[in-house]
Image 1 (cartoon, rainbow, N blue to C red):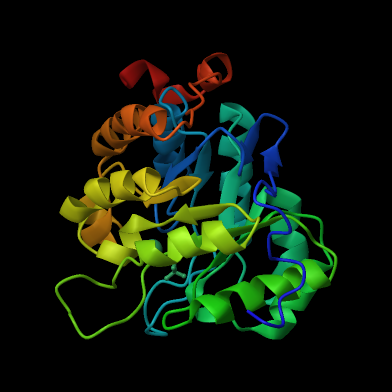
Image 2: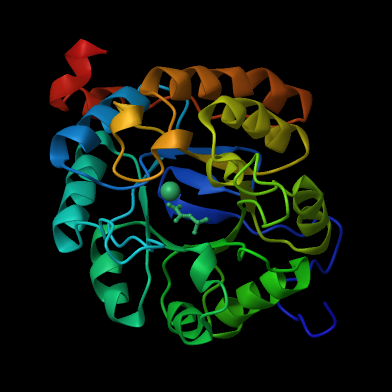
Length: 291
Ligand code: PEP
Ligand code: MN
């Protein structure tokens, strides 16, 4: 960490609060709970997700429209059409949306439609992308690389910060190891370390860490217990039918139950979870009457 200048704490209480929207932030007293599918598939899917989560203790939505797939033959995302779907559910639910940016050429379009630009694990050291995101003022959710050290992770954040954007959120999403039982190994030690050395918000993605839905809720609870500022969890109206990452997707009911279960742990560690305030706007979503 010797070369980090901007990401490191200067005093014990030094913390950055990143504002996702006028009413949603991360890094302060309030935790940030994010839910949504791996991939935006169609408008009906996202409306169902938004209408259910807007009335739960979930503050933001996720959904990829540019997807970094291991195989070039797998679905690559809806692109601009997906951004328009995200904008529609964002405007109608009042919830900020997070989506992945894979290339510099996508930044302007994504920034026009979404609230937070996610840098995926595979791009954590795409330094040109990080520099370009540093020149925007949009919040950036920086996911830890597949095999990145804590120091490399902090230095990746340093690229964004040093190019002028202070709105960086770190995300631990599991690292590669030898065991194939879980998809990755959730490194909660890194979460504790990052909270000690940086002033940036740190959230946890238990979905990509575990790779199996039955492990996700307990890992999310462990993340909040060890001091994470929030969690980002994949969920889907029909989890088994997800076009990507189906094995780790929670049902919407399980997502809501998970979000509700975090309240007691938040209280135990001196944090709070904002309760739904979007109910009136969510009432404009067509599926609300069904949930
Ligand atoms: C995702 O969030 O859908 C994703 C691809 O995550 P990661 O970059 O952590 O693999
Ligand atoms: Mn995914």
